[in-house]
Length: 121
Image (cartoon, rainbow, N blue to C red; front, side):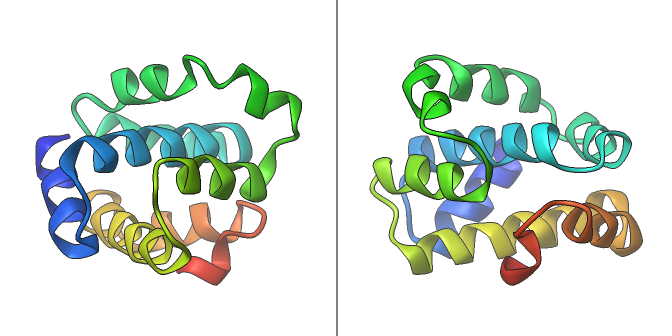
């Protein structure tokens, strides 16, 4: 997790704590909306990912009531202080990291199998 958080913080120009919360939010979204086996393979390659997902889901009850999907993720990320361009940068870096960890083919399957995600690839 430290490697990924460090990369995201540096590339997107955001605080490490925000980067870690962002990873948890995005991975949690992928787990709910994406192809389960491929997403779990990605999560399994990131030490600390399960804890980050669990942390991101604490206190997210109200946002779940407002609906799910990519728009809800965007709203939660903006709530952390991220702008649209920062969210795009974070997503691209996370996908690049995923390609390095599980391969381009599997990451492409996650992206194409998750509604709305291809615009960030």
